[in-house]
Length: 353
Image (tube, rainbow, N blue to C red; front, side, top):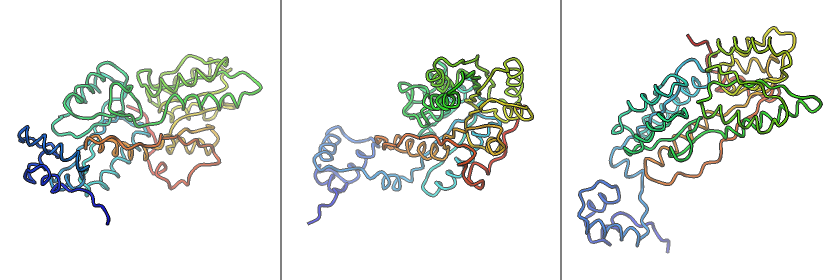
């Protein structure tokens, strides 16, 4: 004889209550006397009843309402991520998912905290945010969590005590990987490395820089260029640095604004080794043309897939299903994916106003 899973009707009979009362208890809708609540919970435990979340959502006509807070502007990576979210939103609408994107100026913790404060907790089942590691952002996240809204960080973290999960690559390992490749390219000579990041307040960039410095060892690490992910600013600062430091042998760009980096290198008689992040159209073309050497891509399609799954688990008050770590893909000129892939369908990165 095949044992069947206990149903909610079984729980109601075992507890000696109506089906409606049992339903209110397991779906946490309240208005149940303490005695009946205790009996239903005891029956759930005794029978091993497992709540069917999908059926409960269908019966309640529930729609998951998730907001993803991304940096605004012309950053090609986040533009691609917005496209991925829109594609997911359309695909998931029949399954009662409502995915919305809200943007906030990049690297501005005060405005990001205002954006988070402007979200209505009563209208949300979960939030994913590209975080800025600043006290006002942490406070805004804690207010949402205190109101019962789970918050996970995406791409850039706040630390495990300040959110309900993190989706992204291990950024310190990305920096260590870049350093390891630089060391391999400098087996017979010392490296002089110029690091470029968006801003020190971006934890993902800071973690990449820390990993880089840790593995570089006694090779020379120059002062950081902060480009605010703006191509025009990166171009100006990099051109100046290359003129002042002709001894530079490697560049590691940890953020965006790489259209400016490419312009600064184009036309130079010689160039350093270059490692940067994200496979987007302008970086792909630069790799094909030999203007850069390595792209570390964090696979945004997988990040968004995991983000939706994690938010759903949190909204359903279930332990999140274990997900494999997002391992970045390392591209050189010889292993690029076909140009018709998702990354090549994006508009090129432009300058900020």
